[in-house]
Length: 438
Image (cartoon, rainbow, N blue to C red):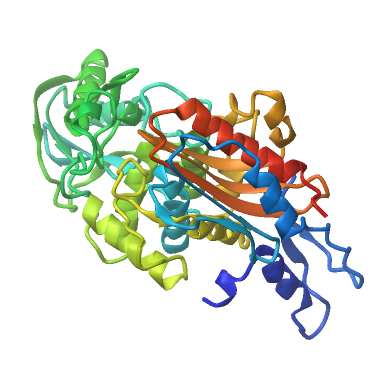
């Protein structure tokens, strides 16, 4: 684990200089301008690295960015070696959705980037079928352009109808099984006022757990089964009943649709800050780590992974995987180190690939929208975070001199002045990007 905690440049340099017999092996490096890992043949004379800003000058420039009335603010900037360049009030604060970076790191390491999750239909007896949830966060009712959402309910219906018709079955009792996940679908620490709008988490979910835009299904498993039954009826199969029923695992399978790979799911989750994606993946992390596939089990698994991988401080608290809980506390420096770790190895490439680009993609598309923030456009790649009285930003950026720096910035107790908080975050990141500071 020692190597993992080294900075990006140190890791890449180590990979390039390892002595071996025979021809030197190609070197895999992260290309920050394209947000992807690339493979190149080793060279005998490595290029001179871009100059890094002077720490004192950069800190002075950041201190000039207005942060009045934003409560507690914290900034940590790491140099290409993963060493601290600037640290201003590094504390354990509420990070909001930036915690998704931590969830993604652990899940990709434990489950593997190519993991997939399958929704199935089984037939325990003639005239009986069970829709079994496999924990696909992005099963959809309509075809999506996103590679993160390939599994269609209609495909599952088509396969089921074909199997039933081949068996001469025209009427079924429909059961639905969401037992892969346990515990409450709504976390105790989430605000009750969100229940009509935010998805309740289940192993059997359709359309992000929503019945329409900002209209959450109170029981996503039952709702998915109802939509499945509706489609069966439209195809000529009568459904006599719908009820919760656990499959034994021995029933013959008559239909199946698989999710995207975990790295595709998490790239989407990071780019669009999907709470559903993060919380469903957290439950898979729990199960794969020997814990329960629940909010609590996933939280414990995530905590243990962070502790084992040098991304922990005694003042930190985990509570879920999405950042919806205001009980979560993470040191700003840990967020910055987590980003640096994601740039160090291909297993985590979904994270830098998914980070929104300032002024261009994802949750940053409409940010960095004034002259004081213009230097960050296209140069800042970062995860956003927002809760009541909380705003955060964590990612990497390319300076005016071409150096790649990782950073994290958090504001707590913002008095709901989100516009001011976003301006502070965006102007601070733009300041770093523009600063030669040498």
